[in-house]
Length: 528
Image (cartoon, rainbow, N blue to C red; front, side, top):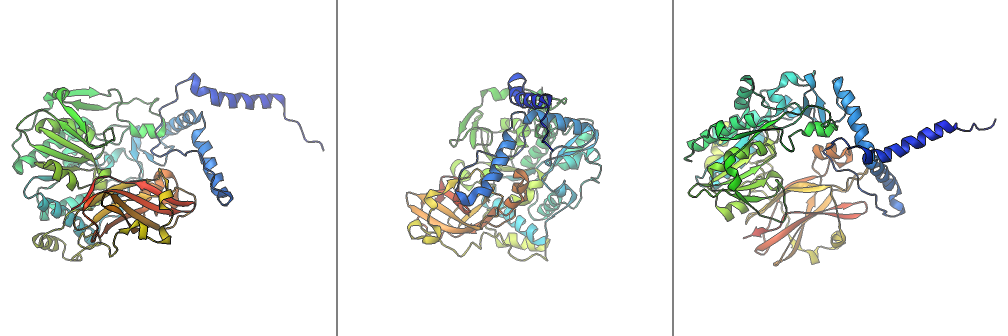
């Protein structure tokens, strides 16, 4: 039997569709799409041994770079959203068109999944106490905005029964009130009051709180600062100018679905009219809101604030800036405790702002605590061990050694390939040790070895210490849709005994199938 010849019309249709897919982005504006992950880059030839991996990387690159892809994703996800379904594993569709962020656990932190145990809570309290004591009476606040699903549980997915009153953020705040009273400001009740008054505390299509909810948080913050001796009165909301939507309104969840161009966006924030005279200086070569920066408000005689924050701060900072002469802003990705900036700027107030689901992770790298603080923690948590696994008094037994004497096991580090699949979340160094945390992966489809290293380079020399890359990072696996990338984390304290005094730049390495990969960390780490 002869093989049938495809009809000409079918061939023509296929050719037209293919041409349309490539021409469409030039004929119409693509819908806004922000997937919350890094799209696949061009595949690289690594030799015959890497053919299987090359095939997977090529497939991923073609799928991510198909010209009509944003149109297809946006249209399909809009149709799914209208029937109460989500087209992204990063977004959960709730009731009445409300969207909620999914970190891979399906609102697990709000439901109380993985709540801290006594040992973890005690270690967290040690971190808090160490910071409070290190400031010698200067105010220290940990400001905790609530998650959207804890304020609007009735608009969550049908299967979501509401937040757990024993979840990590509430438990830690309650324990902090017993051991370090007044230093943790959990804003759930203040934001819930905004909602109860009929004012939107969150918007339908974004993860973050509104300007009205942020103002309620600001009121609580100012009350705590006054209780700690800061002479400043809360400004009325009428002092600030409301901005509805603006040039780039917060709508991250709609952007993840690709439907932001098709749904009505409504978000109200506030600006301080006096901010027009503020001057910003950058503290590194980076730019953008996450980069470290110094805001000079020109208001002489007012205190200096060091604010380490996450993205919830975008709505909060307009209310805070006017109370200080200078504000040093830094992002939590650059470290939760910035002793270097404290030593440089000598702030009168130090503040950490972090959304409630991140609260359990922010005390890493804190100064050591006193015996009096240990006694308070022991009284609050009598069943917890005396010292937890992250205690700064227990660094690794390894030593930094000159790279020239590192041996054959670390040959090839200088040829390491920079990888986009990494981040040094924290790097703090003092005379006691180096606290370093983050993740690094080649994002391959195959599991990578856990062998890694930390390198410190500066005028005093070039030094190396082994580092295990084996801690679970489900957020990384979810972001890149690569379950094999989950064991990509590191978080440890390393001894700096014998390391010459000086200023160092940090780099992290990991062995991969094709050789070493490298990740640039912060510069300017000081070994006293």
